[in-house]
Each structure stands twice: as structure tokens, then as C-alpha cells.
Length: 111
Image (cartoon, rainbow, N blue to C red; front, top):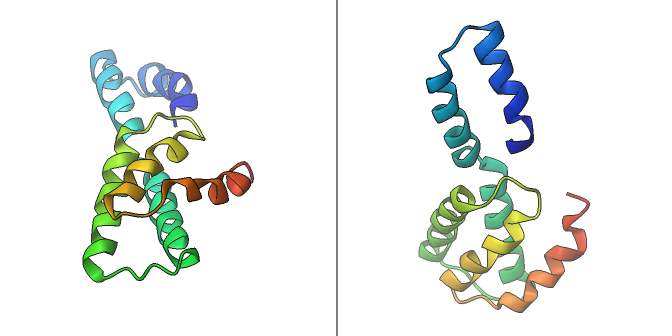
């Protein structure tokens, strides 16, 4: 998480003795790339929107959603509502209506 980076820097550099050059490069990259929850959230939300709209997804479209959600989560910022912004990319990749994101916004604060 981006919020815990300062504490993680301190722990690695001062307590564990890891070189500052290594931590300053690896930790921000890892915090950005390792957003598994965002990728799952975007993929499941897209499939939910497809089901609500009676849109039958074939295997290729599900794979497209999965790959696009993974790529979009890497590009998302490390803040909680970032997944909603990149979800537009996931929905348009398979032709789902982007205005249905409002269904997800209603419960996003709870997640």
C-alpha cells in the first residue's frame, strides 16, 4: 500500500539494514504492481455488470476482462477509489455499458 511506504522504508533501511538505493526503487514499484485486490475487484465487477444486463460472456471475453483488469490495476493509483476510474477501461474492452458503474459506486465505499 502506498500509505505504508514510509514505515516500510524505515523498517527495511534502519532495522534490517537494506541499502537505501534498493528500497527506494523496489518498494514503490512493488506497491504499484502488487494490486491483486484491485484486479479481482474490477474483473468481478465487470462480470457482475454483464450479468445484470443479461450479457452473455464467452470464454474469450472473460479472459479479456481478466487481462485488462490486471493491466488496469497495475496502472491504478494506490488510493482506494482508483479501481472505479480504471474500471471504465475494463468495461469498454468487452463492450459493456460504462454507465452501469453507478451500481458499483453505490457499494464501493463499503468495500
